[in-house]
Image (cartoon, rainbow, N blue to C red; front, top):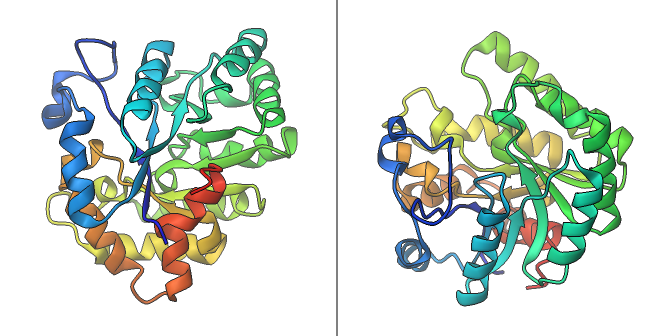
Length: 281
């Protein structure tokens, strides 16, 4: 079974604008390109990746598609289109849809001031167009403002394949985590909703010294609600280096799922992502 990282990013600060990325982000406030990631993938045995958008712009999407065309270990790209403009969305999806690497879209919902941005009429209409094209929607469902909207998206666009990024960034506070569990369980009711085991190292109690024991309870809960056939690994590199390197994220995740059957491990580490994004690997 091929090993697939379904969530990694690249950005070149000299070529594309990323307004959210400011000096306060420290080690990730610089350019990250394929030659830096490639040896790290080989070192841990990851075969393919999916690059996910890091800015709501055509420039970022075009950059990712260019990278995909030049690196054979890139299997797919999650880009961006302007969901507030259904007509433009349709036009750009027709254009991007001709590219075999273009698999779906994401919008930086958590950067929007409007907490209900994703369920606006125009956005729903655009997501219906996305679903008609057989493309996927990555949701930056950062708790508490966005995860609760997943059931609404399912109701309004029932044939849309959705994947929740980073298990919606589980909160550390136990009272808040109770609500997170309830909302994740509600989201998991739909068979078209998946979740990424990604970005969890940056929501651990001991940010600098986390281990698989910190993320295992989160993964176990997700397994209970979604099953391995709807969970997929993502490194969230280079954001992940805020609390460790690529190898640590990969190795600790493997430890966290080591008690699962081989079939379940294969699903999380490759099979689910391959099926969800129609990578045809």
